[in-house]
Amino acid sequence: MFYEGNKVLTMLEQKKIPLGIQCFTGNTELVEVMGATGFDFVMFDCVHSGNDVRAMEELVRTATWSGMASYIRVPDPHNETDVTRALETGAEGVVLPEIHSVDDINAAAKAAYFYPKGDRSICPSTRSANYNFRRFVEFTERNNRVVTLVPEIENPDGVAHIEEICAHPDVHMLIFGQGDLAFSRGEGTAMDKGAQTAVDYQTVLRVAKKHNVAVIGGPVLTPTAEACRRALQDGVTVFCLGLDSMAFRSWCEDTVRALADGVEGVSEWTRLPVPESGFTEDRPVQSRAVPKATHAA
Image (tube, rainbow, N blue to C red):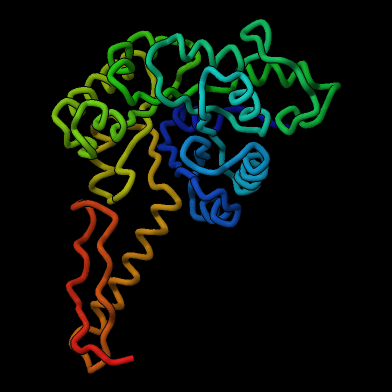
């Protein structure tokens, strides 16, 4: 049976740090690897990826088998179908993008919870309900008790209304979306290096702590031990590190660079120039290896 308890929130109650990862590829093999290597939850993206409703159910099923909780980032928190279908897959929570005020959360809550807490339509013929009509009322009670809404604070309005957002009874975690926020502040892709975004970060951390709301964050692209330690000291207690597609790019860059550096100056054999890195100065600089000779075809 599903929704016996919220895994991430239970870990927080036990003072254990939950670790998650974002999944854009929709690849079930990668999801199995995530579970096998120690991740506690996976956040499936339906905003910037091609993941659809049918694929999402199989992804959540794989995550469950692999010992991970699932969260789904829905395209529109105001779309009842988006929210309901995400939870019907068996996810224990939904991530709500571009939250501007508590009204956005209330719209999602109406679709996420059953009467008397919300206005979600009933259907026992779903994975989350375990395809069980007899126990459906028990399922609705568990759903209303366990499902959590995770707003993304990624625009100036969200920061301005952070007090009301954190006070919402169904918000136990939030994401500080520093990338979108910095861009909307005119600070480009500076992420947490932008001056105003850094101030916003401290504001969100302070208010979240006041309302006992966990902040999801950490060094997404370069998860070093030191960067994780700094995030924990800042007040982050749920870590979501890496995106599967970008993590694969990082591995590919490192692999290409390793070979180029390894063969440089060893013999007459050379490698083609290493392509430009897709990352910033937070990543190691690319190899300087260049071909020593040009051979005719």
